[in-house]
Amino acid sequence: MGDAKNFITEEKNHINNTIILLKKILDRPEIDDVDRVALSTLVMNIYSGIENILRYILEKHGVRIRKSGSWHKDLLSSSHIRGLITDELFETLKDYLTFRHFQVHGYGYMLAYEKMEHLVVNAEETANRFFSEIEEIN
Image (tube, rainbow, N blue to C red; front, side, top):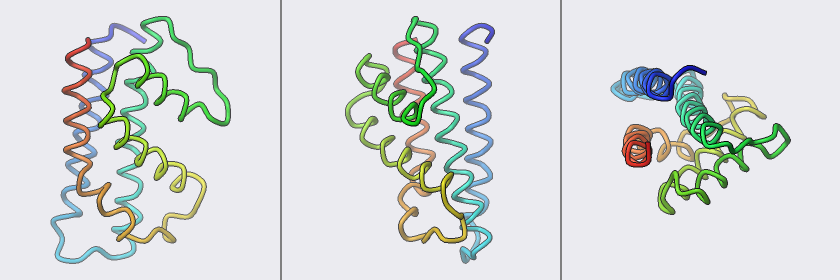
């Protein structure tokens, strides 16, 4: 996976580029069905990038997360237990994990914007908080 600094920097850039796209959609006067599907995908991509970084850091410290039906939840829990993320960020990321599950296992057009709006609107703040917290431990 290369060195940690480069990997994390690349993932951070991908997340930030995704946030730019998300903000372009949010700047529109109205969110239509296509926008809603795009936003749900972008939010899921941001969370997946966060997972990539957490998995990388855990593996760097010798912690392997086995692929299973619950590996996403196990990854987040292990990251919290090992102090990579604070209690507050853990609770926030659990909401993104739950959303990710619905996004992957359902149809994007069925998602109600009102139910995901807080995740969309807070995605940049959540990502920045995440970057700040992992910077402190890396």
